[in-house]
Image 1 (cartoon, rainbow, N blue to C red):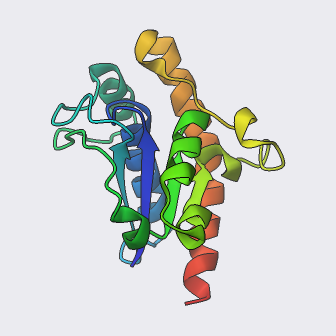
Image 2: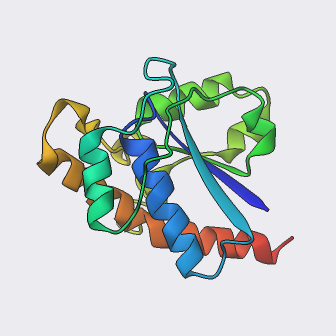
Length: 165
C-alpha cells in the first residue's frame, strides 16, 4: 500500500479537503486498493474537531462526504509509515522538513502544489495554498481550485511509484 498524508495547520480546512479530493481521484484511477490518503495538522489546535463547515460544504458539492473527519496532529512516527508527506503551505513544508528524523524522511516531504504542472518548476514559497479559514466561501473555492490542479500530477506520481515496487 502506498501511503500519503496531507498536512496543514489545524487539519480542518486544507489538508482534509486535499485528502478527500485525492482519495476520490486515486479511486477513479483504479488505485484505491493500492494507495491510501489521510491528513493531519502541524499543531493540535483543532484536535478532535470536525472539518470546517465551509470546507465540508465545498466537498459536498463534489459528492464527497466528510462526516467522519476529526482533526489530529501529525505524529513523528508517520515519517517512517508514509511514502509521501504533502505540505499545503510553506510553513508546513519547512516544519515537516525541519522535524524529519533523517534524510530519507525529509525527502518524502513535498509541497502539494509541486505536482501542479504550472508550478512544478517553482520554489516551495510559490507553491502554497493560503489558509481559507480567515476568509469566506470564495477562499474555500480558491483552495479547491489549487488542490484540484495538483491532483492529476500526484496520481501520476503514485502510479509511477507503484510501478517501481
